[in-house]
Length: 179
Image (cartoon, rainbow, N blue to C red; front, side, top):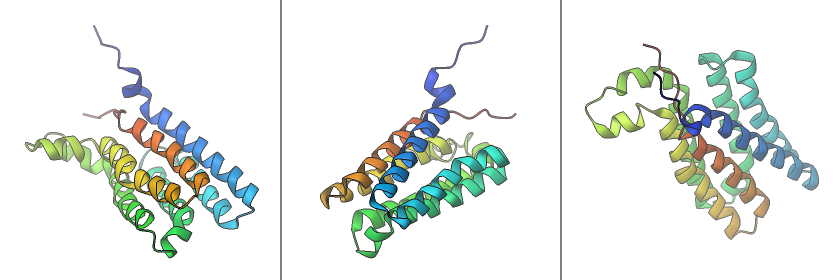
């Protein structure tokens, strides 16, 4: 008799994708309202990120292309804040890159670290979705949200808050492990 998986364990990645796409749609709308080519370009890369999974699959090419597009899109979204020297945006982006790279290399990390004797390695590198989901939410999105709100950029704070919900949802999902 098999036990049914909890909803977020089974569909957490899909829920995360929903929030990421809603955040990107908001970014596109806000970019149109502001007529900001930078935000529109960022939205384009952020839409290309999940679209790469559709075209190239959830295996290596799709994950790598999606991760690179997500990094470029996020950089373009916070570029003005980085150039202004805002520490929350700089810290958020600098922590975002290795977390995305962890997801890119997850097929290689999971089998190695899931059976690690170290609980810390087992729960982070052994479950890269948990690492990149919670890490992205806490160490990347929240500093950017805080910084954007402190400087009156409520549209950017809203976009990153929706993306943070996606990151949080991703942390609950568990990929199917091939034996």
